[in-house]
Image 1 (cartoon, rainbow, N blue to C red):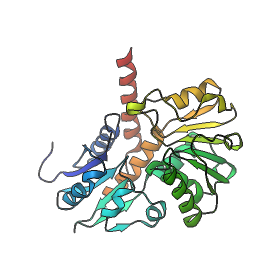
Image 2: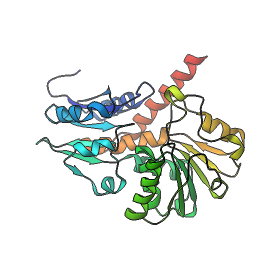
Image 3: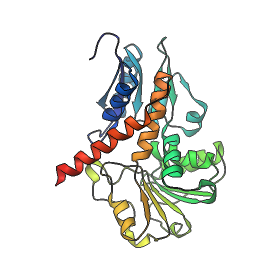
Image 4: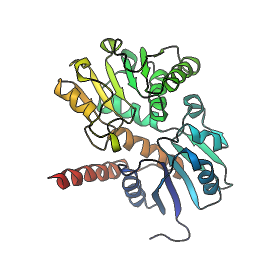
Length: 289
Protein backbone atom coordinates (compact mmCIF):
# COMPACT_ATOMS: atom_id res chain seq x y z
CA UNK A 1 0.00 0.00 0.00
CA UNK A 2 1.42 3.35 -1.07
CA UNK A 3 0.98 6.08 1.52
CA UNK A 4 2.37 9.51 2.40
CA UNK A 5 5.49 7.92 3.90
CA UNK A 6 6.33 5.71 0.93
CA UNK A 7 9.81 6.40 -0.43
CA UNK A 8 9.94 6.33 -4.20
CA UNK A 9 12.61 5.03 -6.59
CA UNK A 10 12.41 5.39 -10.35
CA UNK A 11 14.54 3.94 -13.15
CA UNK A 12 15.28 6.52 -15.86
CA UNK A 13 16.20 5.28 -19.34
CA UNK A 14 14.88 3.94 -22.61
CA UNK A 15 13.84 1.38 -23.72
CA UNK A 16 12.55 -0.12 -20.47
CA UNK A 17 9.95 -2.61 -21.67
CA UNK A 18 12.47 -5.46 -21.24
CA UNK A 19 13.47 -4.49 -17.69
CA UNK A 20 12.82 -6.79 -14.72
CA UNK A 21 14.14 -4.23 -12.23
CA UNK A 22 10.82 -3.04 -10.80
CA UNK A 23 9.56 -6.51 -9.90
CA UNK A 24 12.93 -7.51 -8.48
CA UNK A 25 13.29 -4.34 -6.41
CA UNK A 26 9.71 -4.31 -5.15
CA UNK A 27 10.01 -7.98 -4.14
CA UNK A 28 13.13 -7.02 -2.22
CA UNK A 29 11.41 -4.13 -0.46
CA UNK A 30 8.49 -6.36 0.54
CA UNK A 31 10.79 -9.09 1.87
CA UNK A 32 12.76 -6.54 3.88
CA UNK A 33 9.65 -4.77 5.21
CA UNK A 34 10.54 -1.50 3.50
CA UNK A 35 7.87 1.09 2.64
CA UNK A 36 9.26 1.80 -0.83
CA UNK A 37 8.06 1.68 -4.43
CA UNK A 38 10.15 1.24 -7.60
CA UNK A 39 8.71 2.27 -10.99
CA UNK A 40 9.80 3.25 -14.49
CA UNK A 41 10.37 6.60 -16.20
CA UNK A 42 11.13 6.22 -19.91
CA UNK A 43 13.31 9.16 -20.95
CA UNK A 44 16.51 9.86 -22.81
CA UNK A 45 19.07 12.67 -22.47
CA UNK A 46 16.77 15.38 -23.84
CA UNK A 47 14.83 16.02 -20.62
CA UNK A 48 17.10 14.25 -18.15
CA UNK A 49 18.15 17.41 -16.33
CA UNK A 50 14.54 18.50 -15.75
CA UNK A 51 13.57 15.08 -14.43
CA UNK A 52 16.57 14.81 -12.08
CA UNK A 53 16.02 18.29 -10.70
CA UNK A 54 12.37 17.49 -10.02
CA UNK A 55 13.25 14.31 -8.12
CA UNK A 56 15.47 16.38 -5.84
CA UNK A 57 12.36 18.03 -4.35
CA UNK A 58 10.11 14.96 -4.17
CA UNK A 59 9.66 12.03 -1.78
CA UNK A 60 12.42 9.91 -3.32
CA UNK A 61 15.12 7.86 -1.61
CA UNK A 62 16.99 8.12 -4.88
CA UNK A 63 16.76 6.83 -8.43
CA UNK A 64 18.36 4.39 -10.86
CA UNK A 65 19.77 5.19 -14.29
CA UNK A 66 20.18 3.04 -17.40
CA UNK A 67 20.88 3.44 -21.13
CA UNK A 68 21.34 6.01 -22.55
CA UNK A 69 21.66 8.23 -19.46
CA UNK A 70 24.42 6.74 -17.29
CA UNK A 71 27.11 9.18 -18.42
CA UNK A 72 24.95 12.26 -19.01
CA UNK A 73 23.41 12.08 -15.52
CA UNK A 74 26.76 13.01 -13.93
CA UNK A 75 26.19 16.60 -15.04
CA UNK A 76 23.19 16.93 -12.71
CA UNK A 77 24.58 15.39 -9.50
CA UNK A 78 26.10 17.14 -6.48
CA UNK A 79 28.68 14.52 -5.53
CA UNK A 80 30.16 11.32 -6.94
CA UNK A 81 31.45 8.29 -5.10
CA UNK A 82 35.22 8.00 -5.88
CA UNK A 83 34.84 4.78 -7.91
CA UNK A 84 31.87 6.22 -9.79
CA UNK A 85 33.91 9.34 -10.60
CA UNK A 86 36.75 7.23 -12.01
CA UNK A 87 34.30 5.14 -14.04
CA UNK A 88 32.62 8.20 -15.52
CA UNK A 89 29.13 6.69 -15.30
CA UNK A 90 26.43 6.31 -12.65
CA UNK A 91 23.54 3.86 -12.43
CA UNK A 92 22.52 4.66 -8.85
CA UNK A 93 21.77 7.99 -7.20
CA UNK A 94 21.10 8.48 -3.50
CA UNK A 95 19.03 11.47 -2.42
CA UNK A 96 19.99 12.74 1.04
CA UNK A 97 17.34 14.16 3.41
CA UNK A 98 18.58 17.62 2.44
CA UNK A 99 17.97 16.94 -1.26
CA UNK A 100 21.59 16.41 -2.23
CA UNK A 101 22.13 13.90 -5.04
CA UNK A 102 25.11 11.54 -4.78
CA UNK A 103 26.08 9.27 -7.67
CA UNK A 104 27.32 5.70 -7.35
CA UNK A 105 27.90 2.85 -9.77
CA UNK A 106 26.80 -0.64 -8.72
CA UNK A 107 26.98 -2.11 -12.24
CA UNK A 108 30.67 -2.87 -11.86
CA UNK A 109 30.20 -4.61 -8.52
CA UNK A 110 27.24 -6.58 -9.88
CA UNK A 111 29.16 -7.64 -12.98
CA UNK A 112 32.28 -8.65 -11.05
CA UNK A 113 30.30 -10.69 -8.51
CA UNK A 114 28.42 -12.52 -11.27
CA UNK A 115 31.46 -13.09 -13.48
CA UNK A 116 33.63 -14.50 -10.70
CA UNK A 117 31.06 -16.36 -8.59
CA UNK A 118 28.73 -17.64 -11.33
CA UNK A 119 31.13 -17.65 -14.26
CA UNK A 120 34.21 -18.79 -12.35
CA UNK A 121 36.44 -16.32 -14.20
CA UNK A 122 39.75 -15.28 -12.64
CA UNK A 123 39.98 -11.66 -13.77
CA UNK A 124 43.68 -11.19 -13.06
CA UNK A 125 44.49 -14.14 -15.33
CA UNK A 126 42.28 -13.11 -18.25
CA UNK A 127 42.29 -11.00 -21.41
CA UNK A 128 38.98 -9.38 -22.31
CA UNK A 129 37.27 -8.07 -25.46
CA UNK A 130 34.31 -5.74 -24.89
CA UNK A 131 31.69 -4.59 -27.37
CA UNK A 132 30.25 -1.31 -26.06
CA UNK A 133 31.89 1.72 -24.48
CA UNK A 134 28.78 3.39 -23.05
CA UNK A 135 27.55 3.33 -19.47
CA UNK A 136 27.48 -0.45 -18.99
CA UNK A 137 30.75 -0.88 -20.87
CA UNK A 138 32.36 1.78 -18.71
CA UNK A 139 31.35 0.06 -15.51
CA UNK A 140 32.38 -3.38 -16.75
CA UNK A 141 35.76 -2.42 -18.21
CA UNK A 142 36.59 -0.13 -15.29
CA UNK A 143 35.97 -2.81 -12.67
CA UNK A 144 38.01 -5.27 -14.74
CA UNK A 145 40.94 -2.85 -14.78
CA UNK A 146 40.47 -2.14 -11.06
CA UNK A 147 40.54 -5.89 -10.32
CA UNK A 148 43.73 -6.53 -12.30
CA UNK A 149 42.70 -7.67 -15.80
CA UNK A 150 45.72 -8.46 -17.98
CA UNK A 151 44.34 -6.66 -21.05
CA UNK A 152 41.01 -5.15 -22.17
CA UNK A 153 40.20 -4.50 -25.84
CA UNK A 154 37.29 -2.10 -26.32
CA UNK A 155 35.24 -1.37 -29.42
CA UNK A 156 32.05 0.55 -30.14
CA UNK A 157 30.07 1.51 -33.24
CA UNK A 158 30.54 5.11 -32.06
CA UNK A 159 34.33 5.36 -32.20
CA UNK A 160 34.86 8.32 -29.77
CA UNK A 161 32.99 6.39 -27.07
CA UNK A 162 35.40 3.44 -27.11
CA UNK A 163 38.47 5.65 -27.51
CA UNK A 164 37.59 7.84 -24.53
CA UNK A 165 36.83 4.81 -22.36
CA UNK A 166 40.20 3.22 -23.15
CA UNK A 167 41.98 6.49 -22.39
CA UNK A 168 40.07 6.99 -19.14
CA UNK A 169 40.83 3.47 -17.93
CA UNK A 170 44.53 3.85 -18.72
CA UNK A 171 44.61 7.18 -16.87
CA UNK A 172 42.37 6.42 -13.88
CA UNK A 173 42.94 2.71 -13.24
CA UNK A 174 45.77 0.89 -15.03
CA UNK A 175 47.36 1.00 -18.52
CA UNK A 176 45.62 -2.16 -19.73
CA UNK A 177 42.97 -0.89 -22.17
CA UNK A 178 43.26 -0.63 -25.94
CA UNK A 179 40.80 0.80 -28.46
CA UNK A 180 39.90 -1.46 -31.40
CA UNK A 181 38.10 -0.08 -34.50
CA UNK A 182 34.54 -1.39 -34.81
CA UNK A 183 34.46 -4.43 -37.08
CA UNK A 184 38.12 -5.30 -36.43
CA UNK A 185 38.18 -8.78 -34.87
CA UNK A 186 41.94 -9.37 -35.13
CA UNK A 187 42.45 -9.15 -31.35
CA UNK A 188 39.62 -11.52 -30.55
CA UNK A 189 41.64 -14.73 -30.80
CA UNK A 190 43.91 -13.60 -27.96
CA UNK A 191 40.98 -13.11 -25.56
CA UNK A 192 39.67 -15.44 -22.87
CA UNK A 193 36.42 -13.56 -22.21
CA UNK A 194 34.23 -11.77 -24.78
CA UNK A 195 31.64 -9.29 -23.50
CA UNK A 196 28.63 -7.69 -25.14
CA UNK A 197 27.77 -4.46 -23.33
CA UNK A 198 26.54 -2.69 -26.46
CA UNK A 199 22.82 -3.38 -26.05
CA UNK A 200 22.73 -5.06 -29.46
CA UNK A 201 20.45 -8.06 -29.15
CA UNK A 202 17.84 -6.56 -26.85
CA UNK A 203 14.75 -4.40 -27.43
CA UNK A 204 14.35 -3.48 -31.10
CA UNK A 205 17.61 -5.25 -32.02
CA UNK A 206 16.57 -8.75 -30.87
CA UNK A 207 18.14 -11.33 -33.15
CA UNK A 208 21.15 -9.13 -33.94
CA UNK A 209 24.72 -9.54 -32.66
CA UNK A 210 27.85 -7.38 -32.83
CA UNK A 211 30.04 -10.41 -33.64
CA UNK A 212 29.95 -12.69 -36.70
CA UNK A 213 29.99 -16.23 -35.30
CA UNK A 214 32.90 -17.40 -37.44
CA UNK A 215 35.22 -15.52 -35.04
CA UNK A 216 33.99 -17.37 -31.95
CA UNK A 217 36.34 -19.96 -30.41
CA UNK A 218 35.05 -22.78 -28.22
CA UNK A 219 37.66 -22.10 -25.53
CA UNK A 220 36.31 -18.59 -24.89
CA UNK A 221 33.81 -17.45 -22.27
CA UNK A 222 30.95 -15.24 -23.50
CA UNK A 223 29.06 -12.73 -21.35
CA UNK A 224 26.14 -10.51 -22.38
CA UNK A 225 24.97 -7.73 -20.08
CA UNK A 226 21.44 -8.27 -21.44
CA UNK A 227 19.12 -10.68 -19.61
CA UNK A 228 15.90 -10.24 -21.58
CA UNK A 229 15.96 -12.23 -23.79
CA UNK A 230 17.86 -14.63 -21.55
CA UNK A 231 19.95 -15.75 -24.54
CA UNK A 232 20.75 -13.08 -27.11
CA UNK A 233 21.97 -14.02 -30.56
CA UNK A 234 25.47 -13.23 -29.27
CA UNK A 235 25.11 -15.94 -26.60
CA UNK A 236 23.26 -18.40 -28.84
CA UNK A 237 26.07 -18.25 -31.39
CA UNK A 238 28.68 -18.78 -28.67
CA UNK A 239 26.73 -21.66 -27.15
CA UNK A 240 26.46 -23.27 -30.57
CA UNK A 241 30.26 -23.17 -30.81
CA UNK A 242 30.59 -24.91 -27.44
CA UNK A 243 31.49 -21.87 -25.35
CA UNK A 244 30.52 -21.31 -21.75
CA UNK A 245 28.04 -18.43 -21.58
CA UNK A 246 26.52 -16.14 -18.97
CA UNK A 247 23.81 -13.51 -19.34
CA UNK A 248 23.30 -10.33 -17.33
CA UNK A 249 20.77 -11.71 -14.85
CA UNK A 250 23.32 -12.15 -12.07
CA UNK A 251 24.82 -8.74 -12.82
CA UNK A 252 21.33 -7.24 -12.54
CA UNK A 253 20.65 -9.09 -9.29
CA UNK A 254 23.88 -8.14 -7.56
CA UNK A 255 23.85 -4.52 -8.73
CA UNK A 256 20.25 -4.29 -7.44
CA UNK A 257 21.30 -5.74 -4.10
CA UNK A 258 23.99 -3.07 -3.83
CA UNK A 259 21.46 -0.38 -4.78
CA UNK A 260 19.04 -1.32 -2.00
CA UNK A 261 21.87 -1.27 0.51
CA UNK A 262 22.82 2.25 -0.62
CA UNK A 263 19.24 3.58 -0.60
CA UNK A 264 18.24 1.93 2.68
CA UNK A 265 21.49 1.37 4.59
CA UNK A 266 20.50 -2.22 5.40
CA UNK A 267 21.17 -5.68 3.99
CA UNK A 268 19.13 -6.59 0.93
CA UNK A 269 17.19 -9.91 0.77
CA UNK A 270 19.27 -11.47 -2.01
CA UNK A 271 17.41 -14.77 -2.30
CA UNK A 272 13.98 -13.13 -2.42
CA UNK A 273 15.20 -10.94 -5.27
CA UNK A 274 16.75 -13.92 -7.08
CA UNK A 275 13.50 -15.90 -6.78
CA UNK A 276 11.55 -13.03 -8.32
CA UNK A 277 13.93 -12.74 -11.26
CA UNK A 278 13.77 -16.48 -11.90
CA UNK A 279 9.96 -16.41 -11.63
CA UNK A 280 9.80 -13.71 -14.29
CA UNK A 281 12.01 -15.72 -16.63
CA UNK A 282 9.86 -18.81 -16.13
CA UNK A 283 6.70 -16.80 -16.83
CA UNK A 284 8.21 -15.57 -20.07
CA UNK A 285 9.17 -19.08 -21.16
CA UNK A 286 5.65 -20.36 -20.43
CA UNK A 287 4.12 -17.47 -22.37
CA UNK A 288 6.14 -18.45 -25.44
CA UNK A 289 4.89 -22.04 -25.42
